Length: 132
Image (cartoon, rainbow, N blue to C red; front, side, top):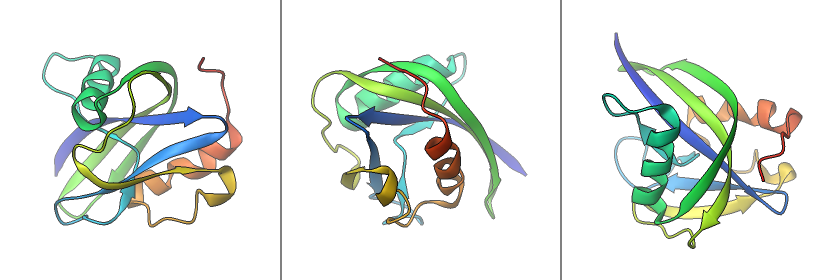
């Protein structure tokens, strides 16, 4: 089975967590944490900063690694490294996604998450390291 390794930014501000709705592909309309594939020779934190610049035109501060989720989709095995992040500069602009929301803890289950991303929610609700 093909293995895809990605990074995801858990961007938080004022007690809210940023989520995006996918605007393309077979999972279009599903919600996810922004991020993307790690390129050859790239370190996960570098990849995450690059992906957020490309997808959201913003700079982030990458904090602690929250978790690594492994999930078997029908076509591939996903390894997703998730980092707690905060916004360093810029406004989050949707360059690839169709929608975005800042979610409170109570709202985290209110969107239709991609299966791998959904596994992050219980971890996120129980662990709140300082990322500023």
